[in-house]
Length: 294
Length: 278
Image (tube, rainbow over all chains, first blue to last red):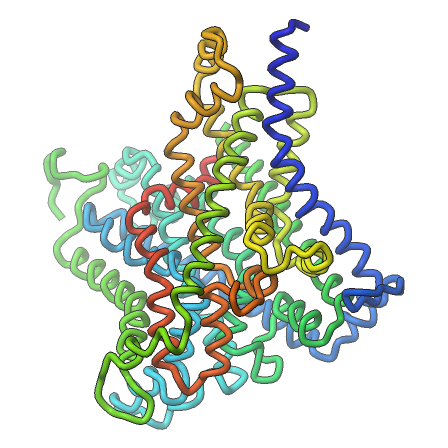
């Protein structure tokens, strides 16, 4: 090996050292700790090893587990609907030429706004004295007025709607980017063959932008599982009761309201496993669609 | 629909007829309204003072006495700018090395870095919080910046690595032949070449950190160190009857990210779609 090559390798190692050190110390080590502490009863200071009790007794026998998983499930189930809306919107944007720029900017706007600000807005709109009830009164539907965030069903619906509202623009822009990359002559060919707009979208565009659809779904699923803490914290505080508590939010409550750090660590491990599965599935589908192309 | 000449065909698609064009446009306008309406409503709400009818700027002029906006926003700004800066330097250095200065084991390290993308902050935040409080890193800017940088390193390193891979090796070779050190090659040649990637990563990090609640809530809990997001989130529960002040604060808090977004929208879109383009 030449002196030059040795020097190059040494430089390479030096350049990656900071990143690797930070990544190991701040992500790797606590991840391993989380596994260990999930097997202990832990108040943040002293820990006692209790095996899998946090998982078996703590999580599985939690009387609110069904409610929490249902909430997570309903939020996740809404994602295909939300992404489909983005798909239609992206399709429409590709057909209107230059004015699509304006719509894309407007749709993407919520991406720049924090979940806290979005939640404050949602709270203002949906409180008893808020905007939605004023509109209902105005159009003569006073009977429908209610404290939208104060009743279990409507509170969860409000969180689901606000979440999808907030990610709509991001997904639309991702899918639009995919659709703009599709070779226009393919559409022309399909239309010459007599395919309508819907048929072209379904048979030509969708298979070609599979990657982008996967990306939109994965980003949204991971966000729904691990990043809507702020939305729930501000909008409903997980309530009323446990009506809007998700796994992610229950982790925060376990640790910082109830002081059960070990149990919270166990919930964290469950969330980690779920995101690993989602990431794994998306990689597999990526490989599959890659095979399709070649 | 009539066939148009090639000049009028945009993107190779047959232009829509007037009727369908009007329908599509109206639908898009409706969606745009649904997106914008809450912001407009929040603005109107910020002009309403509890117990009075009519609109006034009272909430806005009283904002600074209700929320120490300047201090809270400065804290957010220090964290957001600091994280963006640290991330750009560290991730681009690593990306340069992973792309151009490969050494035995570099692929495995890159794989590890990318693997951390799948670890969400929430999953390990409990031990992280306890570790940080033990070593006295809570309520410090550098400690919190460390958390933000660490949990987004994977994506940013990946981004810079693929960016540098697309640049020709000869750039590095010729700089080295001219006698430049590796550090000089990085700062003088590679970093200036990577300006678009730097902007994308910087803008993404700025918006992400400015808009975060969870990490800020746990790692910067002090009244002097709290961010604008934490201030608003905690005020919402305390001043639930003072919606005007909170909504005014929420609008002000969104100004920096919306400005950054409008200037750098193009880069932001590149950032979020990069996952799909390999």
